[in-house]
Amino acid sequence: MEDWVFLLLPVAAASGWFAAQRHYARKYLIEHTHSLRKAYCRGLNYLLSEKTDKAIDAFVDLLTNDFETVETHIALGNLFRRRGEIENAIEIHENLIARDDLNPQQQESAQFELGLDYLRAGLFDRAESIFQNLVDHENSRMGALQQLLDIYQHEKDWGKAMECARKLQDLGKPPKRGETVAHFLCELAEETLCTDDDRAARQWLEDAQRADPRCARASLLMAKLEMREGRFEGALQSLKRVESQNADLIQEIMEPLRICHDRLEKPSGELIGYLGYLYETYGFESAALALAERIRSEQGAGKAIEHMLRVLESLPTAKTLNTLTGFLLEDGAETQREALIRLDRALDRMYSNAPRYTCNHCGFSGSELHWRCPSCRHWESTKPS
Image 1 (cartoon, rainbow, N blue to C red):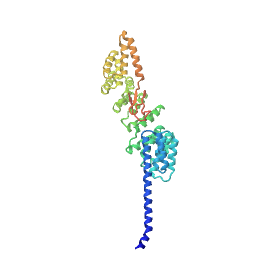
Image 2 (image 1 turned 90 degrees about the horizontal axis):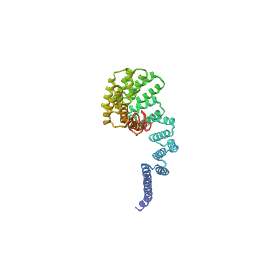
Image 3 (image 1 turned 180 degrees about the vertical axis):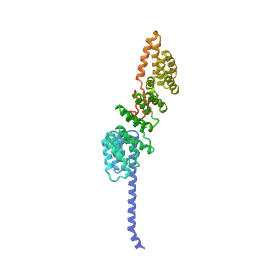
Image 4 (image 1 turned 120 degrees about the horizontal axis):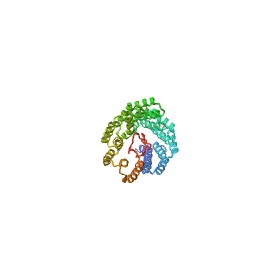
């Protein structure tokens, strides 16, 4: 019996050694993991508090203790990119891609971030190459297509932009900034209109109308083309389509509408009736003012004043008041003329300084209609103020 006990002693010793090793290894792993978790939380807290510098320091410390963590490299590179240190971001992401221990998903993530680095650096050709490769990967396809769409819009390569937009639509994910094939076709039409290639412009616009029958921009451009070619009846029909396509843009048809009616020598009552319908239906200032001008030219300033006094009750704006003072100056008594002149000038300055268009997405405002907001890059988000 004692012999058996003697023989089991080495086994017991070995078992005890292995148990101790497992205990200390587990203890080290728990402590190490706890330390890393605290470092991650510290970095994330700084990031959420928009303390980018401290977040970068925290993640740099984390890399020192956990060099193999792919997510840490990506996060640190992103922080450098946000802070504008693009070279550091590129270096981190390029070094990460060069490693041979990344799984396919990690490799895609690193490449995607490097593509964003190149975009931020203005290296569009390099970014395009990366995102073109990522389009073939299911997990990165939609994000890569959206980035390519942004690149092609920046480069005004409308043909490739259309291709990306169609692919995103096929994937069931419309482009994030309202990009449409119709807008890209309109861009091509505007380019050809500038070169007096009316035939090509007409083809692009017809394609745009087929791509999106509700594209008001295509109707406005078609009206412009028709007027340039002397086809005022066709232009009139294009202008009237805008109402059903995008009523917010009715003010854009006022002046060409007047020109078409005059060139076609249509009865004055027809235009007055249509303008009255637009004002009564939508209550737009532009329709009220266009109607007032038409009444003045056909029936005199007195009738226009009566109309503007009614308009002023529902639309007490600087522009409506400015228009009214103009009519009063034309028709008013001489004793009040000096006061009206001063009032008219003051209102004119107020109106001329006010923005005519405002982006309903970012608030950008200006005096011109931008189909693509110069600030947030959203399409058709700019509306009359």
